[in-house]
Length: 226
Image (cartoon, rainbow, N blue to C red; front, side):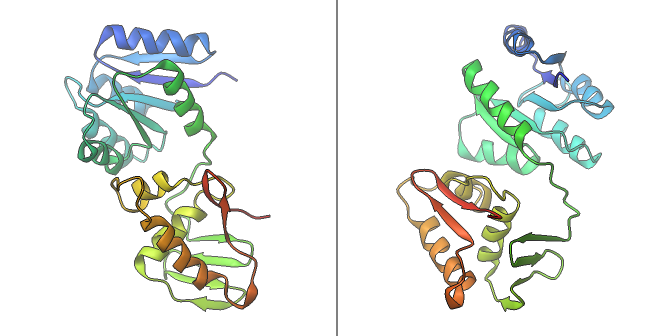
């Protein structure tokens, strides 16, 4: 079955460029040229993903995505922006975007990012617990246990572990952790991630237990069932 993609972009050349590319890739594409029209289509249904411009007439991209999420629409959204400042990108992610891409961009990268979003398992914010092998995390009581042993974590450690468990069986890079847990970019050479991962591992892997957080050489880390 063809994937359905909504493109909300006021610049006609950009809109046509994206629509043509995804159409050639076999997507069923629908377009909107302003924020209000985009919100109508996004909440009316059935799309597998949305490509959303940050600056739109009628209703800006941030307001549109906040309205989508408030209405319970969980469709993955990739936000396009000409604003390269970290603060602006963080605003988009906090508003509910799943990814972002700074203009100008290549269609190849846009396509790869949309495909990656579509491969993600749908996550429910109402899921009361997460688990991996003998590790269990209760999101309501914020209690973590492994083989029945309760593990006391700092708020940051809990946040890191939750980030991993929600992406179980997928590689998580240092950049993903920095943006997803700390909400901003550090110097790429910082060791803040490695320091926190090391401390978290000591908490999780007591008594010679098999490591929960595995290192994927040259890529990052992974929490997996097997």
